[in-house]
Length: 72
Length: 269
Ligand SMILES: C[S@@+](CC[C@H](N)C(=O)[O-])C[C@H]1O[C@@H](n2cnc3c(N)ncnc32)[C@H](O)[C@@H]1O
Image 1 (cartoon, rainbow over the protein chains, first blue to last red):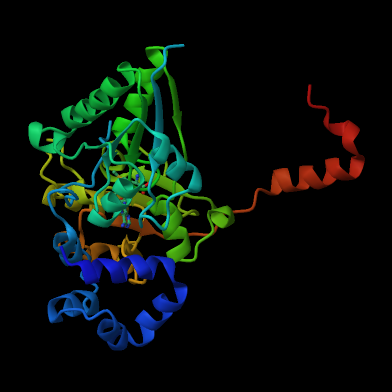
Image 2: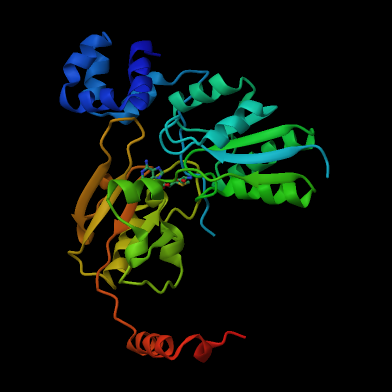
C-alpha cells in the first residue's frame, strides 16, 4: 500500500483545482506529495490497473472480476 | 413483515466521488454491508463508513461458472436478511444495471416477505453520456449485453446509437469466471454488425476513468478493425447512429390537423 499515492488520489477526487493542476503541471504535484518514482510513473502513464494493484491489500482486495451479469 | 431488510446501493464508477448521499447514509446505518466493489480505494471508503463489511468477491473462486457465482452472492446477502439484520448490498456503478445478483437478492427477499429496495447509482452509461457528450434524448438509445445481442434476433435501429456491454466476455458461453472475450464471439459479433453497418463504420471502444482526473479511454476504430487486443474487462462498445431517422409524415400531419381542430377531435377514452 502506498499511502502518499492513495492520499493524492483521494485529494484529486475532492479538489477540482488539484485536478486541473494534475492536468497541467503534474510534476509539481508529485513533488508536493513526495511520490516515489514508481508512483509517478504509474500516474504519468495513467496506469489504472497498476495503481489498483499497488493500492490493493488483504483488507482491500482488487477484484479479479468486474463482470456481474449473465446474458440469458 | 419480518425484521430483516435489504437495501441495494451503487458506488458509481469512481468511489467515493459518485456515491449518492442516500447510499452513503444507508451504508453507515447498516448492521452488515455485503459488497462487490472492485477497487481498493472504494473498499477503504466503505470501511470508513461501516466496519461490518463482507466481501463477495471470493464467490468467483468457489465455482468456475458465473451463473452459480451470482446465485451464491445473492444467497449470501439473503443470509444476513434472514438473520433479521438491516443489510446493505453494494455493487459498483448502478447496482441494477447489468448486475444479476442484486436483482436476484431483491426478488428472493421480497418473496420471503422482507422489505427490499434498490437505490439508483451512476452507471457506466451515465459516464458515457458525459465523456462522449451524447444526449440520449436526441436520437434515442439502445443498450444490449454483447452476447445476448449476438445470440438474439434484434431489430437494430440504425438511426439511434447502439451500446454493447460486457464486450469483455462476448461469446463466452461457458460463462466461466475467467474473464476473456472469445475470438469466435468477437468475430461473429463483427460479422453481425457488418450486416447492418459498413465495414469501415467508425465505432468507439470506451472505458470511463475510474481514477479522478484520469482521461477516459475513447478509442475510435473502423468496425472491421476491432481486435481482441482492443478489449479489456470493462470495455463498452459504442456505435453512433448510421442513418437519419425518417420523418413520420402521416403522424406529423395528423398532429398538426388535430391540434388545429382543438382538443375535442382527439378524445382519449
Ligand atoms: C457487469 S456490468 C456492470 C455495470 C455497472 N453496474 C454500471 O452501472 O455501469 C460490466 C460492464 O459495464 C461496463 N463498464 C464497467 N466499467 C466500465 C468502465 N470503466 N468504462 C466503460 N464501461 C464500463 C462494461 O460494458 C462492462 O462489461
